[in-house]
Image 1 (cartoon, rainbow, N blue to C red):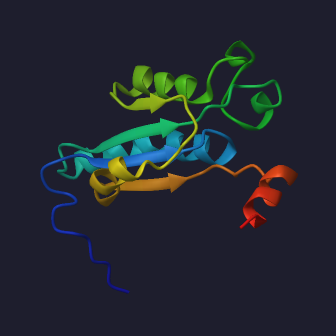
Image 2: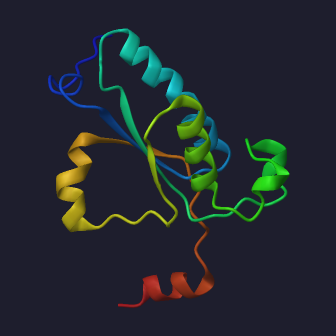
Amino acid sequence: MEHNLPPDLLRHRAVRVLVVGAGGTGSAIVMGLPYLDQAMRVWGHRYGLDVAMMDADAVSDTNCIRQPFSISDIGQNKAIVLINRINLFWGTNWWLSPIIFTLVPSIATRTIARTWFLGAWTPAPPTRQSRIRSRAP
């Protein structure tokens, strides 16, 4: 199998990654990205990764069982906890947005083409009201 990458992907800038969701899957993904960032730098890509994480959810006591959170994190935003932890430990300058992911068309046209999206959230099931509205003419 042959892999073709756009020629400018690994050249003169960081590879941008947006992780949407900081739950079980998103937290596992983002905790592994510093290793990829370090490997890229060792192999000659001096810019590495530029990671952003979005999640509006707060840490709950049940999150501490299966996700990389502790009791002292309860009540804090998941993205804030994880990105701050990574930045402090690895010396990165990754950023976060403690809001719900929405795709704004005016921003999307200039952002999507140069960003790898990692969707790690599970959308909430539709409510009865939203199903009724979606059927209306």
